[in-house]
Image (tube, rainbow, N blue to C red; front, side, top):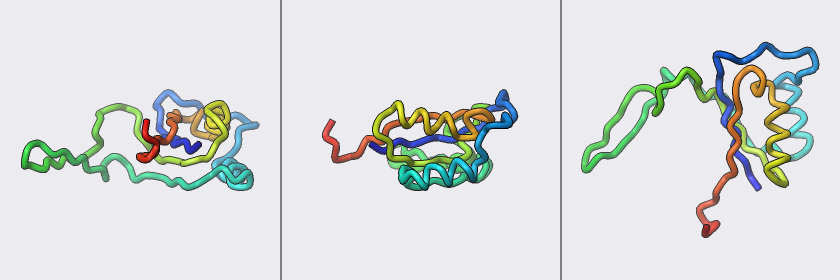
Length: 113
């Protein structure tokens, strides 16, 4: 099953521990295991535009859809056997300590449920 990892900043995050993986090591590990599908960084929230349709109007707003101290800084899509494996992969990501990682199963449109 595919899982989306939202890589988020956190003002209360910690500095890396000596045995933590670097982002390059984490990426090499998940790539070598064949579970990484794709991912990338995102530009800062100042580059975001939120789009809404209300009636016949399209409403554009500069910035993210939610005002929060945390920001989505990037994403990764992984293929994991189950949620436990996806959570273990996310826990090894450097941003699990420095920020936060939200893990969500991908829900394909043709899944029917």
